[in-house]
Length: 233
Image 1 (spheres, rainbow, N blue to C red):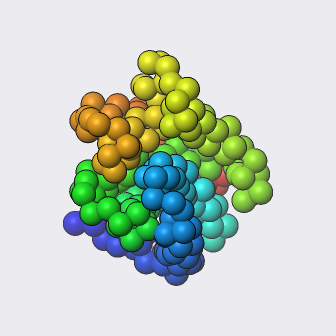
Image 2 (image 1 turned 45 degrees about the horizontal axis):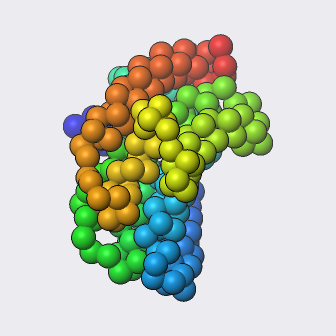
């Protein structure tokens, strides 16, 4: 019950600061773009859009949320709160992953006109977004400001996005398949029929990466919040 209350509060917080509005606005733009793209390019374009925007927006947004909370001195209350670090992390990751999944489904359904595989798509984006969000939160815990975060998040963003983009354009390698970004893109591609096979193996890869990221985040976020309300320690 405590976790679900935290999740609802996170969603309200994100609505308050306009994160959901930004998701809606960006989704509308991408839908309009996809409607104008020739039919033969719609699926590939939508897969890249979903990978690099709805799925990865949370990576940037979660950094902003962490720093907003830090600036409002909310982290110092963690010491007296019964909320566990893992609950804090998972709530943040899930709340943003939910809107990422909804956004991706709307983009494909309206922009591409494809109604098949939407359940698989939503689950894929949901799992992938959770992984990306947790990584973003880890990075944010080292940031001194929004500008600093936007600088230091560039490297993990490139590591997550460049390999799957290479695969999407035919420059694949078996080693790239074990990376979270590639696993997510292949899940997206399978759901909208760019590739022939839909494999649960890609979900397994994402879950493994999510477990690793969650373990690191639990240690890091706990330490960050223990020192002066979230200052790096």
